[in-house]
Amino acid sequence: MYQILKSAHSGWRYVVVALLLVAIFTAVSGWLGKKTYTEGNRKLNVFALISVHIQFLLGLVIYFTNGWFKVDSSVVYGRYWKMEHISMMILAVILVTIGNSRSKKIEEASKKHKTVFIFFGFALLIITVAILLMLKADPSRHLFGM
Image 1 (cartoon, rainbow, N blue to C red):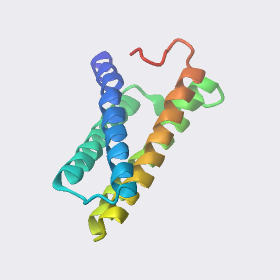
Image 2 (image 1 turned 45 degrees about the vertical axis):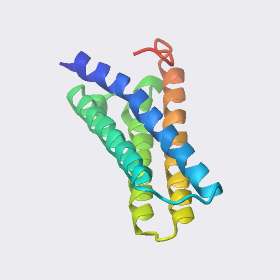
Image 3 (image 1 turned 180 degrees about the vertical axis):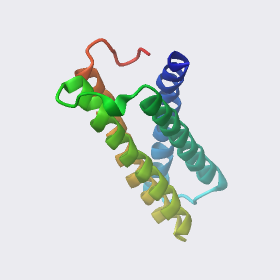
């Protein structure tokens, strides 16, 4: 069961990164191009939000069923999985959620796009840093592998 969840979590990250990249690109082009905020923009942002939340739930199941919260944090490998990874991902989920929520409350289209760009952009930056730190903490992993 653990291996299935780990593979799902590792594979789903590509969906998350792809949706965030498309949402960010759409938001920056809408913001700088002064485009209207369409129903398609809203749906894309919601799909990105949902994908991030699914990834987070998969990660939480792995975290608690595998006992990562019990790992020795004095070792780089243990500290990364016990504290750094989960903290960074919680922050990324919060940023995506706030960005999506705030964009719904704003009336002006360019400000909606700008809000999505900023919050989703910071979330993607944090996710990218977390993945790169994973490679440093666990040399047996590689960027595109599961």
